[in-house]
Amino acid sequence: MAKETANMPDNNIAVLTNDRVAALITESTKAASNQEVSATSSTVTNANKEALQTTEPNWTDRSKNGVHIFLEAYMQQGENEKESLPEEQQRDNFKENVAAEQQPLVLNISTKMLSVAEERLSNRGMTFIPSSTMTITENIIELKTFTCNIMLKCMFNSQQDAKQNNVMFHKKSCFIPKNNATIESFEKICEKEIYKLYDNRVAGKKFNLDTEESEALRNLQQDMQLIIRPADKGGPLVVMDRSYYKQTTEAMLNYVNTPRSICSESCSYGYRKVVQLGQPSCCYDCVQCSIGEITNETDLSECLKCPEDHWSNERQNKCIPKAIEFLSYEEPLGATLAGIAISLTIITAFIICVFTRYHDTPIVKANNHALSFLLLVALMFCFLSSLMFIGRPMRLTCMIRQPTFGIIFTLCASCVLSKTVIVVIAFNATMPGSKLRAWLGFPLPTGIICSTFLIQVIICIIWLCNSPPYRQQNMQSKRGVIIIECNEGSTLAFWCMLGYMGLLATVSFIVAFLARNLPGSFNEAKFITFSMVVFVSVWLSFIPAFLSTQGKLMIAVEIFAILSSSLGLLICIFSPKCYIIFMKPEKNTKEYLMGKNK
Image (spheres, rainbow, N blue to C red):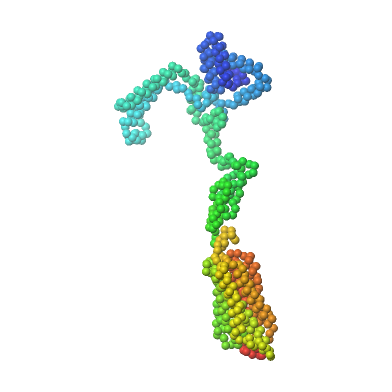
């Protein structure tokens, strides 16, 4: 009967619900009572309950009559339900049953073919616990051995055990240790429990494995080439080769591209998250932080702004101090300009010494030698004033460097204007009936110099009293750079100072240009004209260059304008006189200068 049951068509077996099982059990009980086999109906009821626990029941352990009655009732119930259901619903139920039957409880992907007993044993699942097959005698022997080992451990210390372990081969000892009351009482208690458990098992329970299944269990335990694991999802057990399991596990552990549960990569340092429109919150774009902002953690929504005196590095994950910029003596540009200024100061001092040595000669006395000495001293201080623009700006240097430069340059322009006016008056005073002779003498140049110089001094005093220049740290002009510079304070006062110097230079140029054709072998008005051309050209080109630069380059432009304009005055006015003193001493006479000796 078990073989016939095992060979039954699969389409007659469906998934049992709780209500249907109860109905089947009731019908099978009635049928058993009609045939006067009450014991068989009890067996059928137990068999039905076991059918709920396992998908593939073991029919060999059940009564043949009970099984026959159960199957007949079950098949009759299925036929009645099929006749009462519509055809479409019967078709759907058939598809569901086929789909359920296609899900095996054991999935064998190993190279070994499992036997019927091994498959039946595997279908019981991982939670199945086989009943013990040991006899009561075997259990008592195991208990005696265990207690004997305990007494041996108590009798001998660990050193003797260590010495015995060093021996490779030794005979089995038959030594019986002395009795121990505590261990003996423990042994008796355990022996009583073994008898009690054995009596209960024999009285009310049976073995849940037959001979074939027990043999299959031993074979699966001893086969080291197989490994049985529950599936990750679902109920089946998976039987696979141990080598395949190890290889697959290592491949999964060494897999580099870890699967992601989000649709966007993590935003690294220097980037912030921007959620995509119309997408879940886990979908976002990584946008780089703005300059001056950082992110030092991943997946931040907002960037952190650096302090005012710090800046972001290239990776924008750290704030670093801003670089400090000013025109220093250590850098090549500052050292070059400082060297030029000192060299020109030395040259000017040398010319003063030459003029002092030859102060009695006509070339030095011509055109008021006192003005020449004053102009040379003013030019020397002009060269030295440029050094105030080099180095780290301080409060005092910022306050006085621009006014000092303006006052000294105004003195130079006043001297040049005074020399030009004296040249014009001197040549025109030689004409008969000229009234310009009254203007010749010391008061005229002194008045011109003092009046023009005093106006510039007043402008600078008003500037310093109302809005003096001061030192500031410019952090906005250049990214990542702190420019230490001098703020002019009042921009209007600064440009008024430069404008007044330009006015004096323009007047000097016009007067000298008108006097360029005066008679005489040495007409100083020609050289003054050239010097004023250089002066005006330099300062006209200075304005756009000064306004278009910033930082240390702006200071370098101003220093260059000071040095070049002062050098123009020095060369155009005094180099011809030095040439005559050193190279043409025969021309250093009054007759030659008056144009009488040709």
